[in-house]
Length: 304
Image (cartoon, rainbow, N blue to C red):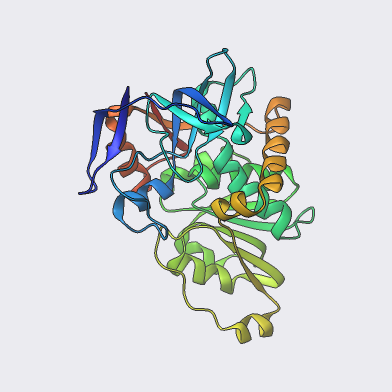
């Protein structure tokens, strides 16, 4: 079978590799679409905090079919392997794809929505009318965050890096769409979901209301600043961090329950999933560059 392999020189190459064999508690999935995540970019660049050994087949979420014809979405948690024609997935992390959803939508859904849903429902207090800022609001997780926060009754402001992304964010349900350099001049927020880090995170921290929380999810724009707890105490504000991979390891039932909640909402039509761009598997390098350069709107997927 074909797989996109990251070699020892961190170059991506489409290769013929052995097809996976399911071990106990696993199912082989014929991959019809694989989600591209920023973690894949970090792995390729050698910046991921827990890097896998090379050579390595990236890809942690897929959508496809099983041998008995079941349409599924699945997580390949630690070992990777999603950028391939087939992958073995643990049965505990395999879920039914809604009947009306395409495989591309399936590969673009679960990880992005979990990364927004769990912080918004478990790590912060989100009251109706709360002001919520979502950064990188046009990307995969950001698009999910805008939709979910709006569905929970928040007044959502989406922050983006370029003017052409504003309409996309407003179309997702945001009340406002702003550029990053405008964040410091906005009214304060109750909740901030941040994937950018760096100067954007620092500006957001200054824009929290008393009892407000900023959730650090990613650092696509630079490292997080050092924070003095005395400053948080003085401003009655808080910082939370979210890393889905560790939560899947230590609180798997919580994560699986959240997947069920999201799939129910998707099936009911209360949230939708749009694919920003699709690439053939052989063009995975260009897909990763699009995500790395923050040129995408919505989730990027690969099609084996």
